[in-house]
Amino acid sequence: MKAPSIIFRGTALEDLRAHDRWRASLDPPAAPVREEIGAAIVRKLSGFLGYTALPYPIIVAQGEVTPIKRCGVTVRSKRFAVYIAPGPDDSIEVARIRHPQQRPL
Image (cartoon, rainbow, N blue to C red; front, side, top):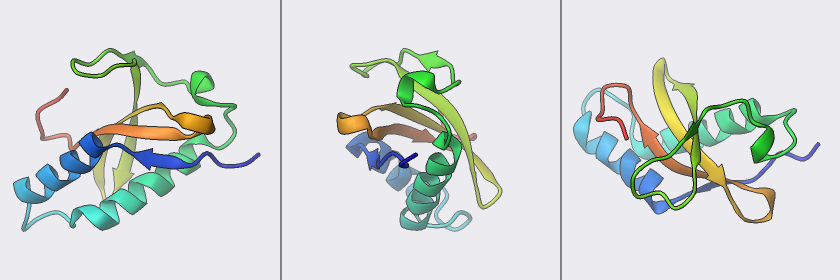
């Protein structure tokens, strides 16, 4: 089974930049976190046949056009809430990313 491609929306990247500003001296910068989140999502999704088969709860968030699913991803001992949506051509879009101590969606 081919691993889905992971696409990061602008909102997810802005969440990582906000995380950088918020925890500048304590957490790693956004670029390595982005790579690790992408790799962790690919690992979590292996074995599932598409976005609809994922066993994560569906969330309806303000400002999101489509319902998104929330999955937890641990990066460097920090647990991030990663909100994913279906992307084009069977890809997965990372819609938003939240550190546990940041304001929830």
